[in-house]
Image 1 (cartoon, helix red, strand yellow):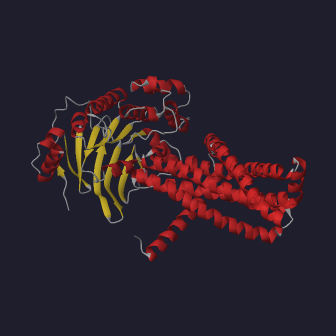
Image 2 (cartoon, helix red, strand yellow; image 1 turned 90 degrees about the vertical axis):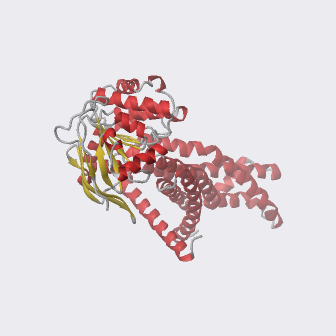
Image 3 (tube, one colour; image 1 turned 135 degrees about the horizontal axis):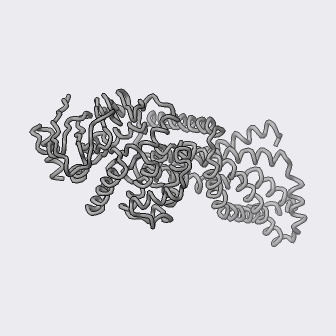
Length: 257
Length: 269
């Protein structure tokens, strides 16, 4: 078992290494050659293959959120504010954070395990000796795909979540589609949408960087692959909350939320 | 500190492929040192590999054999010493020059290292597309087909690596290595993890490839049957240096206590 100073040292070491890894991505992300074909393949895997999971969770979150809040709102005589409340809660916070956490679990672990397994079976070395920069081919493409796909997944989750919420509202309280969504969109402003969307790019960056870092530095054979996948999820999830907190702080300054 | 034992080579090489030690060596290693933390793996290793020659490096597990061949393509950086491959000093090359050298040096990895997410065809396409200028004017499909025919697996072109047996994976990896028509091939434990019959097939395939394409080969192994059949010259890597050199017959008859102990140990394994 690691002592506290060792654990702290490991923590700071890893933070530094992940930061350097992210910096290397920044330097390589805009340099030729661009592995466009692999990038598109990753967009398909990360985006399309996660869509069903994300919209299912979004829909259920919409249902549950409305079912949980509705009785309290009725108690305060504010049931008519349900669309506004759910709209703002979903777009600002629940949609981005829940989707990002699900993606950290699905995408982060899958990237960590895939790259980890490539590392221990020397596929990354094989790639390097065949004249390919594995960082560009494997890491840059995956991080770009995460950065670009996560906002789209969040938008899909938001939309489906609002439909879930509407379903509860219309079943329990006879609200028309037009009225419900008119109220949702009347309340939502750019100050809600822009920071919420911008932070999802950073969520994507965090999931991609941590997943790739853990896989790329996987050690100790198959046991290391499992560890890489597991710690990719843990570290990425933790990082998402830190980014979320910072994003809310910054948005508070610029958008007066 | 161990000293190097040089055993005179005999002239009888009739069971082995033709080889000469004429001309400049394709690979020249001088005084290579490599440490991982406190563990000094290589302590001044020397070796020359000449055209058409099969040199086998044997040694105990963890003796630094794989590290040594990885130094030749700069998958691992040497701490000290000279590594010259095809006339170029590997440690001082920039990335572009290194990639050019890597195209001339095939590398067969221990576990085959086929890309799991790609079909056999895509595995072979991968190095071709990376070196499209080098292979310009040659039909990609034809090159892939020929490479697979050379290893007797033309029918496996659309299979995924997960659908292949260990021996088939090794053959496909060999086809991928051959597709860029390298001048030197580095084999890292080519028969490890294979049953004796499949291992023998791979050994025969390596010999056929060497005869057909006139490539030189540096083979890392702890399979003494493989070493006996395939080598023109053997090097025992012990204590981080090329402890003894010679043909299999010469080394197996050596009176040097460490060499004797090594052969005794591998025979008892």
